[in-house]
Amino acid sequence: MSAPRQVTVASVAELKAQLAAALAAKAIAEAIASYQEAGYGSLVTTPLHDALANVNFSLRQVKS
Image 1 (cartoon, rainbow, N blue to C red):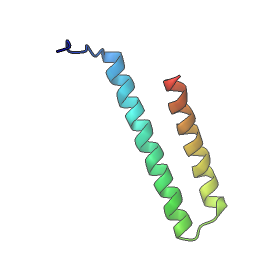
Image 2: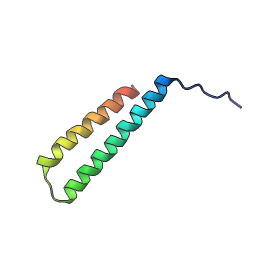
Image 3: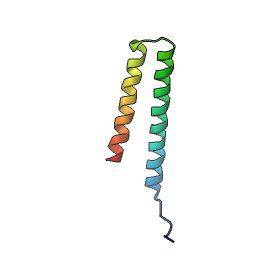
């Protein structure tokens, strides 16, 4: 049996931030799909695509 892993406050905060970013990415992707389904074009969805790209970039930066 292995010893329990210690979790620092910083790592808990980082995990919370990563979870929040992942949830934001999911919500943005769902919003894009909903707007597209409702017939809205790129004027509405382009800013959302940009926001999604920024969130995904931030998540990748944290992982590297």
